[in-house]
Length: 304
Image (tube, rainbow, N blue to C red; front, side, top):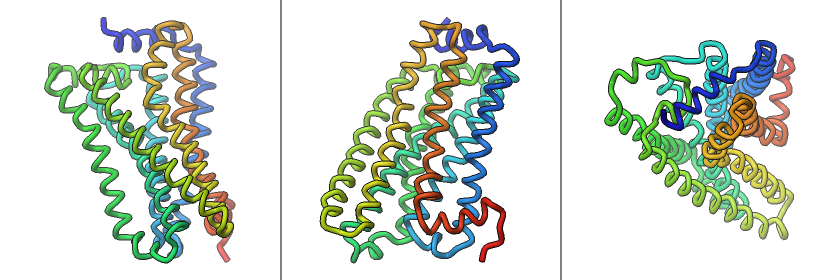
């Protein structure tokens, strides 16, 4: 038995009690619905007001919100399935995992692009409108998707080439390692994540220190942008922990198999939910324009 299948067997063998399973699912569902409720309010606010959908900064932000909302929904479905059905069709699991991987890799790249937009707005305010146009922003979003799809789709192609086709008709416990078990995929993933780590953190640090130097002599907008970059950096840090979590998670499951479900639950809350909860805070609460309109819609009031 491989390590990945062994991990899946351990998770099923040491299932939670009924009351514990219900409590975990209720917590996850309540948090997920709350985050998505705020995200739907953000999307509604964005679509209703021209001030937002004609601004590249908000276009990048709403792309991040939609990406996070889809990822929260996917992970919520997979979490509930793991407690109710336990094993699902491998092809269905493969689709879920691929979509979740693409969304996961989209997030840090999108945050890096938002940091660059902040940098241009503060350090080159006179050229900002020329550099950051809606058309270029949409092209940039397309490049983000192209990059992550080129990173994730080879996992499917390698699996198709190395496992029997009847594997996709079998039922498996839906984890990345059970869906894409080939060790080549693991090596490719590590290389890809190292590249992402270097590029994204270079952008975050570069933009932060450039804005920091500007903030010493500039307006309060530069200081606010500096704080936004810090929040982006914290969110990127949480997202990038996804890159090293599989190894840490596997070691915990093997060392403490009886607590494997608790480990998976903790990882789910910290790595999947927390980063998705920060986006509404960064723009939905801190941003004055969004806060004014968002409060109206979330409280179900008629906009003035």
